[in-house]
Amino acid sequence: MRDVVIFNGLNALDFHEIRDSVIRIPEVSIRVREAQGVWDALGESNFSFFNFLVSEDATYLSNIKIKSLVTSIVQIGLYDRYVRRFGRPEYIVGSVNGDSPLQVCIGETTFEDMILDSPVAKPVASVTEIFSQSSSTVLSGISLAETGVFQHLENTGKYQRVSSTKQDLGKIISHLIEDCHVKKLINVGPGITALEPLQENLALKDIQIVESIDADPMLNWFWMELKKSSEQVSMAQ
Image (tube, rainbow, N blue to C red):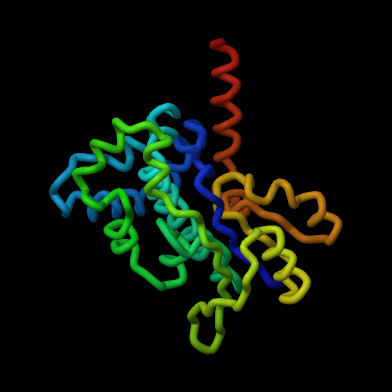
């Protein structure tokens, strides 16, 4: 069955409960620690990726530059786990500019370089300033996402970009289904916000949509923990 991994957008981790749970996934924790090591080596800021991930929503949502980088770090960890358990997908779809987990996962750049080239790290001292800015100001440092489609080549083991002028995710997926015979979509989120508008139409075409976390039976605690947390919050109110 031909499959495609799709990296979700910036809003994948917008809820505190999701961030609090995702940091408990071993591969995600490994990548967060690796990112912290790269950051600490610069020696110019005491910023903590872990603390930012588990911060309250008001703090997390108001700092879009850091949010962009942290989301990419988490998604690379989720992709690491998916590939370790299920192998490399035939196709990958995601942003090819900015803080791009896709570029790291296809080997176009290194994890370290993604962090060092991030707007957050230019200069490192600006992180303190970012926390004091409004979200509208920080938005000026984030470029619009350019979506790329890549195919895994069996003979080289590498990914090659598929020629496509389509930027709309719906059109890209339609192309992969109709022309490339893809039958399974794996979302690296968490959450399937980017695919939700397409679900009804895809179901009619017998296309399987899977969250990478749901595909892993060892992570069956993830959404149950979120449900438990939501119920506790409701009871407290």
